[in-house]
Structure formats: C-alpha cells, structure tokens
Image 1 (spheres, rainbow, N blue to C red):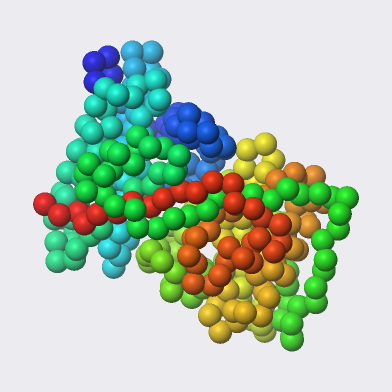
Image 2 (tube, rainbow, N blue to C red):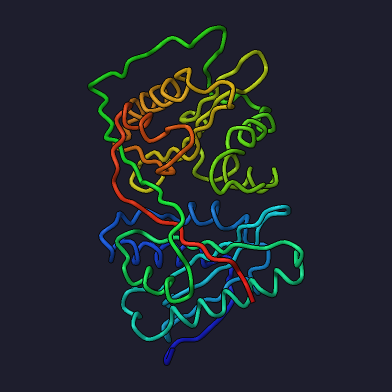
Length: 315
C-alpha cells in the first residue's frame, strides 16, 4: 500500500465514498448512479462508530483510493456486513486483502464484545460482472448465497398507465403525516419472512427511509384498510432525476390481491407526470412473493445481477 495513508471516516467522506463506489461499478460495466444522499441515508445511520468501524486509504493528494466499512448486526440479528472496495487504478497491489483482513478482525472484536453467544454470518456484496471481487471473496471462504436483480423501467408520459380500482374497501394514497410509525410496523410485518431480513430499530429505519434527503412522499403510496397500512411502496429521487423504488411490501394476508401492481402503476404514473424518465428497483431473484414477475408485468426489466456472498465469521 505504498503511497497510501490510512484514516477513519469523517462526515465529509459521503461524497468521496459515492465516487469510489461509482468508479468500481463503472469499471465493471454497470451504471454509476450512487449519490452522496444515497450514502448518507444508507450507510450513515448504520455507522455507529466511524472512528473504529471504517478504514479509508487515501493517496498523497487526498483522493480516496480504497475503503472498508463494517456493520455489526442489529440487536437480535446474525448478519454482519462489510462494504467498500478498491478504486480500479489501485488494484493488484494487495489492498483488497489488507482491507478484508482488517474488516474480519474488527468484526471479531465486535462479536466478542457484544454477542459472543450468537454465531454471526458475514455478508459482502458484489456485482456479478466483478470477477476480481469474486476471486478475492472465494480466497477468504465466502460463497455465493443469494442473487439480486437491479431492474429498470423506462417511463413514458405519452402512454398513460392503466388505473385499476382498489379491491374491496381499501384506500390508496400518499402516506398521511403522522403515520410513519404505522408504516414501520407494516414494513416489519411485510419483510419478516424475506431472505436475510434482520431487525432494524425504528430510528435507524426512519433515517434510511422517510427522513432521508432523497425520499419523496409524492412518489410513495400506502394501502389502508381502515386505519391499518396493509401495503406500501416508497419512492426516492436519485441521480439524473431517476426514481428509485426503495421498498414494496404487502402484509402476508393481503398478498396475491394485486396490491403491489396497483401501487407501482400509481407511483410510476406519478413519476411520468413529474417528468422523470427512468425507474429502478432491486429485488431478490428468488423472492417468496414472486416479486420479479410482478415488476416485469408493470414494465421493469433486469438490468444487472448482483450477488451476496457470505461466510461464518469464525475465529
């Protein structure tokens, strides 16, 4: 790592980290779309100890060359996570191995201090087109566990979307003010049987969703049965005016009634009227709800495939 200096995370690193991740994605042929807001809302609430849980490597001119960030599971969870990467121009110098060694050792310290009685798994994420990342993870005993699709839909304001009536007595609307707690409860209920779901505290969930800079209430919807939220979708505006569908969930007893399609068509129609050209979302390729087919029926197509690699933390 000649020429690089290690330091901890600072509040000014959200922009630099987004740029680092975008450089890695672009080098692999993917869409470099991560914004400062995405990093701030996605990583910021989870980074409880930035001084010790992140290691950044910067060049002499201060540019971020590589980074590793570790996230312990929430209370009661079992899946730790490592995020980061090496800028393409700094590859093939052993930097990835050094950072992965550091990250695993840091997680072992956190595990011993907070949950020695519970076994932890470690997750890392990589695009399928990043062969170097897959080889590195395999060397450390990580194995592919789950595949996710990045899906993309083109929006066309000149072609109105079908408006289907809501089934029964339910109502479809933007999230009314003051119902964020009820939305969180619906989120927990909707995703508790999904692969890899881990408990997340309300304050952290809010920071990542309805309180984030990119959240847009006008591009989000809930389905109400009386006062109960039974389904929802959350919209976020990202780079170049794209809308990102950051959560589509339905309580188990309300599934298979077309609520997800109803919500998505409503939100995509609103995005088209707002002048947005593209919608994106991520989905488990083997979702228990058959979500991939739902998304394809409203116009989404698979744009890229990503993989979650995992291994036991071990000693």
